[in-house]
Length: 178
Image (cartoon, rainbow, N blue to C red; front, top):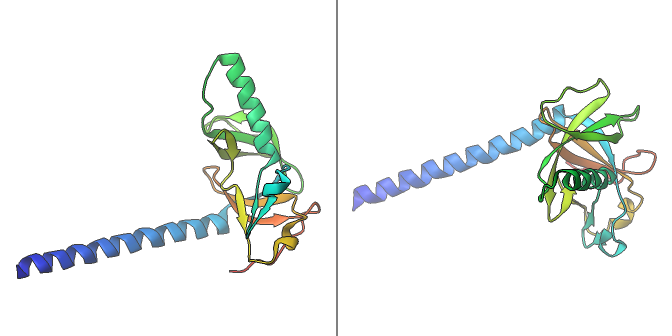
């Protein structure tokens, strides 16, 4: 009975250390993504005004997501595919690093110097990049109402991570708190 109790404690300690190690590894990976990822801006697309501001977050939709949906619809119509799948889109970056849709692209296709590959996911029939919401401190909704762009950091696999929201002149909205 004493040996079983000791074994149980060892299992709990090992499991706890393993969980904490995995959580810390995940945090470190996100911090590296933010620090080393390439910056890109995605233009926001209109969202139903009733869902634009709900509580302490802003619902997000990106114009490039609408363009991907159109391209996926065209691809399905031409090929007879029934389901849209997650994938990559190739975008061209202008001088301000705003992304412009070029084509749907495989993860191994070569890119021009001003192009970047972004990973997207299709969820509930809509194209998503990293998130579909931006959370902010309660009572600060008016700071984010002029949002027109989302700034992302993109890692080497094309995974975007939302960093901040910006206005039509790419000025940062709100204050970055870390």
